[in-house]
Image 1: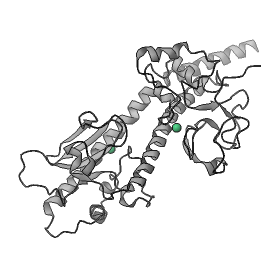
Image 2 (image 1 turned 60 degrees about the vertical axis):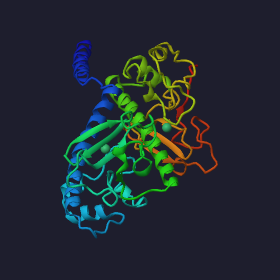
Image 3 (image 1 turned 180 degrees about the vertical axis):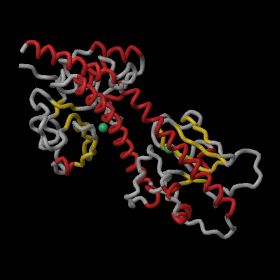
Image 4 (image 1 turned 45 degrees about the horizontal axis):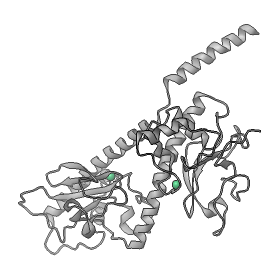
Length: 361
Ligand SMILES: [Zn+2]
Ligand SMILES: [Zn+2]
């Protein structure tokens, strides 16, 4: 019997070593990888769409109709699957081929030269802008008629550090002034988009935390070492979240937390007492694994964490790594109900979660 258990231990060690080889990627590396992929895709999309726009601009007759959606219509006419698969940037929060509520804006992510008011000159002393992708957090991709694609940072564009990059008439830089989207949106819709963007960014952070959670669960099976937000702050103390990258713990909409600005702010996380309230340091409610352990045989995905600072719903991280924005209704809440977590929450999805501190009795 003893011999057998030693054998099991050896097998166990072998598995542990194999798992070690797949060492969990930290949130930072994951974000860099996803961001780099997003940019690579955008760049090649832009080249393809830019080539098309260039061809159209060169062949455009003087009376050519350029009503809303004309470029998209032309693109659709090509029936060229290759180009049709390149009309959306992954960083564009509105890109959704199935959503027709925002006109052409959901189908084509890129802002294209306004060929009506900014004709493409046959001879120009400077490269002329063809297509722009303004959806990336830190700047915009700009393609010019010499088929060069450049990433311009927010600083280079004279744009504020956050918020959407303005294009067209309100643009902060000439590179963004000569382009427009196929559909011009009104201010109310722009505000809606801005809200959606915040939800997307919040979801991205929860997804990164979910990645660490999954890797850690694989690495050390059994119940997690902490319940509630302490678990995620513990990831920072263990450097699964790197120093100065604490914003992954925060929702961009949350006004309670303070984003660490200096190395000293960041170091504070190493000294946090995980038995105390951590609400100032993390936006998210996390599952109380003592009160509501994850059931191994559950048929449905179980909630692991959530952001409840949004007025119209909550971003929920599930144990399969998915992050879903749940409206009040799909949370089981009425329009007047507060979005809360814990045993008293009206929502069965949010009930297992807590803002801590972990209760040990
Ligand atoms: Zn893009
Ligand atoms: Zn949020």
